[in-house]
Amino acid sequence: MIVAAIIIGTDTQLLSWSLFDLFSDTKFTGEGLERVMTFDPERDILYLPAIEGKDIFEASRDMSVYRNRAVRMHVYLYLTSKREYMLNAIRRSYRYEDTIREALGKNRDLPEELGLLPLLESCFNPYAVSSSRAVGLWQFLENTSRPLGLKCDRWIDERRSVEKSTAAALRHLRTMRSIFPRWDLALAAYNGGAGYMKRTMDATGVRDYWQLREKGLLRPETAEYVPKFIALMLIYRNQKLFGVADEIARPEKTAASYLTLERPVDLKDIERLTGVPVRAIMELNPELNSALTPPTMKEYRLLLPAEALKKLEGKEKELYRCTITGVIQHRVRKGDTISGIARMYKKKLNSFLILTA
Image (cartoon, rainbow, N blue to C red; front, side):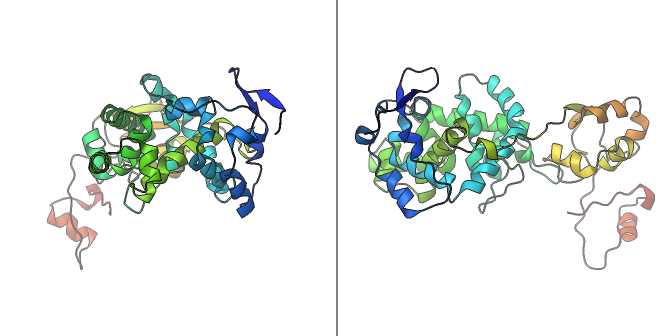
């Protein structure tokens, strides 16, 4: 038994270095995975707190969650075979941490660790699209996002908005937690759906997430969802102990603020007036589907670099030179021309803006 121990954090719990020695591999090996899976907290470590009765966040904070074999397995996999995914997810998370932290500050009844869920959901990529057509950091399906107030139309997809989708995700997570007695079940419901989880629990009589998982009663994705999230959360919060801190550089942040637009604006005009490329503006506003701000929305808030905002001061006439008085949707057919479409709707060609889907 290894007896060298350290004090971690502010707790008085003694944890052996051997716990983190388990995860020293950077490349996957069968032997390394076997070592992780056969680790015995009662035999191979000086002290590890008990896990019984704790929710996943409490157990993660005091390290007792390492008693869970599934969690240990996924920590090992994310540090080895899935290492690049894990590193990219953490690097990207720093771009959006301020927005997510601000949203959590308005929802203090929720565990702050929930802000790390996009590590698993989307690798913190607002443009991520799953095989089931879920979109954004929080991977919302359209039929889930609409009841949560997220717009999805020709002009905008607010599932890609970091600010709006995060607020919606926290509301949704609170609802899941109000339905289910523990956070592990609530997170499983976030992944698999509340209806699916309730039907599974009612049909089997099993009310414990880990028992549902161990008995093979959950879909594979939902069965692995919670331990995967815990594993990524542990690595994120203990980067030095897992030896990944030197591989994760924080990106430089550009000071940015919102500009409330009175009317629709062509981003090319903002580029012309400020020098900020359209591509960079759309990266700050990933919800936009085109270089035109939504003509159907009044007082649209566009996020711009602080320096660009200064350059736009007093230039309202130039900013709003593209005046849109209405929107006509036309399905283009074979043989259609721009001039023909303009004539069809009795519009002058020089005042008719064509946007393709």
